[in-house]
Length: 270
Image 1 (spheres, rainbow, N blue to C red):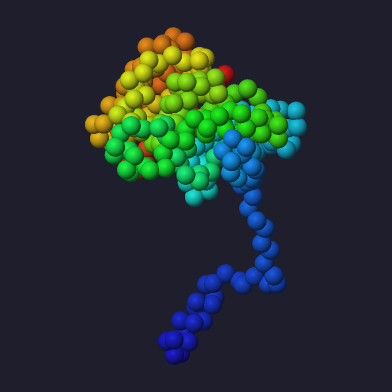
Image 2 (image 1 turned 180 degrees about the horizontal axis):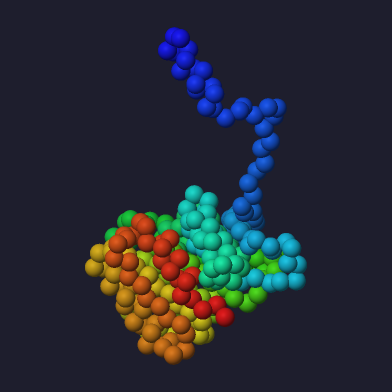
């Protein structure tokens, strides 16, 4: 038999049967996007919402909320919400079933930074300085919106990395009551000549936990992360759960995912 014909016959015999009729396609629903007008920020804002498995069935149950900075679908929302779903598996139970609110960005360099007096900061981030109204937006608009549309309890976590970690640190210092649990990864505390670290840490309430993580990111980033942990520990030792983790095998670009996983394993949500 002709070799090409034999090869064709053998290929057809070994191939799975072709599907007959039409193929059904169903969208894979993972999250919902809410878009609304912020009166404080004077702009339209969007958040991505992940609901835990069983949310609809458990009509009387209320859930903790995890607020994720850099929460756009092309940023950190999908992989962090996936971690939450993984951590909720009944054979793991690393953290309670939780709602994830991914806060999408318009200009993170504006929203996550305070006003800086450093010339390089001003040059490199010319739109900086919007942290104050953005924090108001979180506390006065976003949290009430989520709590009015979903069954939430009083447990609120914030996750921020890099400039998001800077903002989370700012909230921890001056608006502590907005969240119970703080997950601060690779915070950009070099901002404005390290002015936040130069201030006394006087929290406005006692959080339940503060987790700080950093990778092998150079002397400056590693030092300021450790310094933040030390300052927080001075005030919160024996009052809150405090965790610090150094990920020697990771750098600034890939520390977040494993650090959040580590935080979920260690934080006591009871």
